[in-house]
Structure formats: structure tokens, C-alpha cells
Image (tube, rainbow, N blue to C red):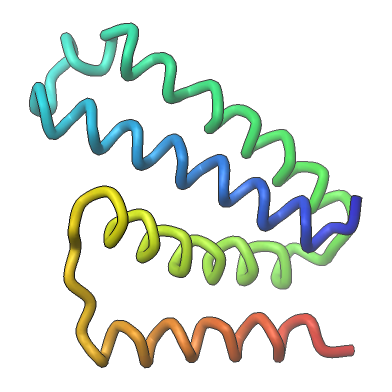
Length: 111
């Protein structure tokens, strides 16, 4: 698997975990009871898979590129998740920021 694909899928798994955690926290609030609930603990599975893929990406690519790509993919996937699952409203500044994030991916990946 190419390192960039591993990093993308790592962030995809992290976003799935974050989205699930947001659903759990939204319904019950932040407490030890919520953090120890089976629904919240279940969200740690995709987070763990994301971690494994991130470690693979780190083994194949420089740290600076890996973390930049992870962050950029995080910005894009979090925005998509927020709009789709939580009806977040993005402004033109948000879209401009995402365009800069895509530009960052291109510039970091450019050899």
C-alpha cells in the first residue's frame, strides 16, 4: 500500500471514530460514565485501526510529510463529516481553507 493511501485511510478511520464519539457525547454529555460506555469504547476500534495505518505511513515517509498529510486529510474529512452527519454550515472562508489544504497536499507530495 502506498504511504499516502495509508495516511488517508488512517485519517478516515480517525474521522469515523471522531464522528461516532461526537454522536455518543452529544447524547449523554462528557463524563466518566459516557467514556466507559460500550458505545464510546466501540469507537476506539476504528481509532486503533487508524493508528496502525499511521504507523505504517510513518515507516514509509518522512515525519513532516506524514503529519502534514494527516492534518490536511483531517480537515477535509472532518468538514465532510460535519456537514453530512451534523448539518454543520460551512462559510466561504471554510471552503477557501479546504482549498488551501488541498494545495498543501499537492505541494507536500510534489517531488
